[in-house]
Length: 172
Image (cartoon, rainbow, N blue to C red):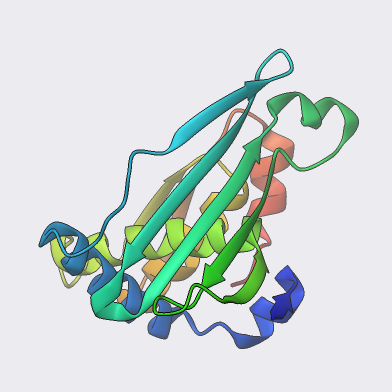
């Protein structure tokens, strides 16, 4: 079984390829060709939740389970608020294929959804991108939109000036 860290995934990921794959997956989901139950939330601590998200897309030969924890109070101890893993299995035999660090995948998948939506819904000559919030997900959104549009200006809206300034120097 393959085990990939976030850093290893970053070396392998090409956003344009991710956009293509996410577009196919969205089409299969919309056509009812996947079995993707509503995610289950497992509350823990004062304000935290573990999210379990399974899905099978036999047409695509994929089966996986994503487990993500969201712990907002981690900010107080300077830890990431989102942690997770993705477990992939062979759709025919059920054999484990891979265990992937899931926070980075969440960032890329969330971004790719925005990129696909932008590609289909935004004007082709759009030059300005507005992003609300500068958390980890915003990096994936920025990268994906830049992959489908020639953006000349990015406007950032965030509660914290400090985090907005950090994000301003982010480079996908």
